[in-house]
Length: 311
Ligand code: MLT
Image 1 (cartoon, rainbow, N blue to C red):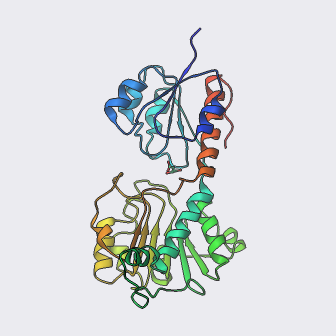
Image 2: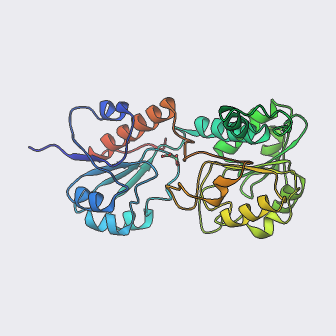
Image 3: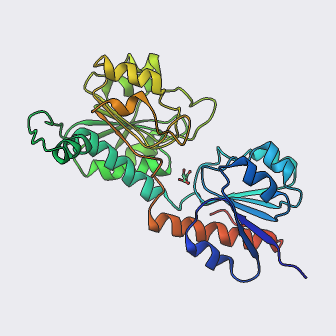
């Protein structure tokens, strides 16, 4: 009898294939390339992806044998879950696998932008010893505004509290009492925009969150604010942010995600006070190993017809 086929459509940790074990035929393709993905997905039982592969209605319709879509990470915005459900395809993810890595990267961007680390480092490599130009701002006693106090937002809040920051948060789904236990004051979005010295976004991408920090919101912030988005591209509107940075209405930004990815050409990249990374939030050995093992286990269970427990 032939083995069930698992298609790995993006680079995943080697631990993923090990955790799948010998009972599957494992194939690989570049899922970001539709002309590779659509024929490759046609006769497989499971597909494993990160964030670059769009498992949309077209891909699901092309996948005649598909039983499971496994997302080695948190967000499901690149998977059409209703289309999958309608086709009887199970969707699994690894919702806690990379939260520490994502939180740590957001904090890295925040400190990088507060202290001009990439710009000063770039200047030094170009032979310029510029100390006063790259004078930065301390985090101590500043107000951190966390937009989205979910798993990652909480980790960021806890870690930056240890820097002596006052933490406020906007999250309509969190109880004030639960936030208070963490030393976080829940506020409205307008209060957060007006009070925060640093804003960090930790929301999923949904029709409600796209453009949440856009032109209107950016008119309400302090001109000294630094904004970090390591969640999903488009939640902070890139055009509005660029205008606010150019006009001195925002002091700096740290961006790991972009409305359209890959993004290698953006007017934001020309600004010295923007720190940008190529969607690296989950890109650590530890997070990738956890995500790969978690989704491999879920795929094994799902293809064996067993119950897949919530991660
Ligand atoms: C996630 O949603 O967990 C990340 O975007 C994962 C990734 O980078 O692939």
